[in-house]
Image (cartoon, rainbow, N blue to C red; front, side):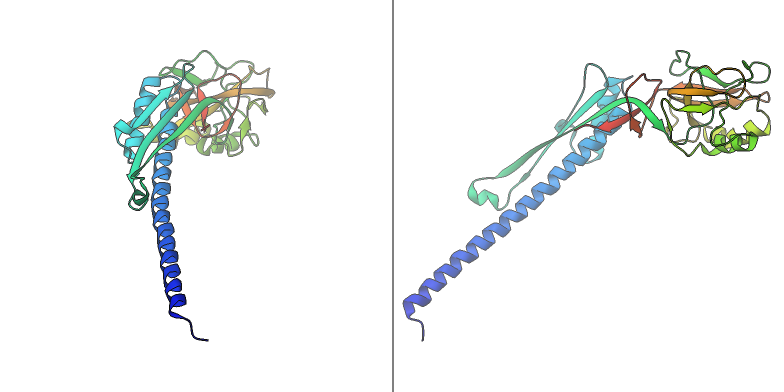
Length: 295
């Protein structure tokens, strides 16, 4: 049966209304998509800024905040739209990024602009697990940033037959040299017992193990060396060992910038305050810390 003129007119009106509704939804979806992209940009910048600032905590909160702001700017957020704050304890930095976009289609419904604020926070604390540590067990002695300390005793200066090396993953000079060169690639944890490598290992064992690491530090100082440089070594802080080959306990971890190895087997390094990616734990800090995003 052919449609009456009135029915055809109603269908046209309904089609027009449906088309307007579909176009409105599609247009609003475009604005929503742009808003999502903007919020992701702001969040990414805030995360990067907080992580960069966290690298300087707790020693230098002011520099941590300025570094965070500079990092957010490098990620496309104007400086005036970034706020950074460090808590009173100096172990958490919070970064807030602001931004907005003009709406092209939502303005037809009275919403001209979208404004967004994204926040990220990073906490730093004692690291509980390290992979790639060098096999030198160091006894804590209230180390100070920027000062050089003996990491391994040379001939004649060891105590109870132990001069500093650890037998990680095996014993003997070859194993020790490989672990010095490449780092011990099994994770070590706070509270774990490890075995000492007694006797003064020096000469090729130490020199060949650390020569490439020392060369990587050429041209740097402890204040300028990147933490990822092979010249920066993570070492276990251990309880004082007993006589001879014996178990000792890892109390924590520290980072040092390698300075020298002499013919007698003395190994010197400059103590660093360092923050790295790693397992976050409680307990006492020995200079090497982990950071994590908490917001």
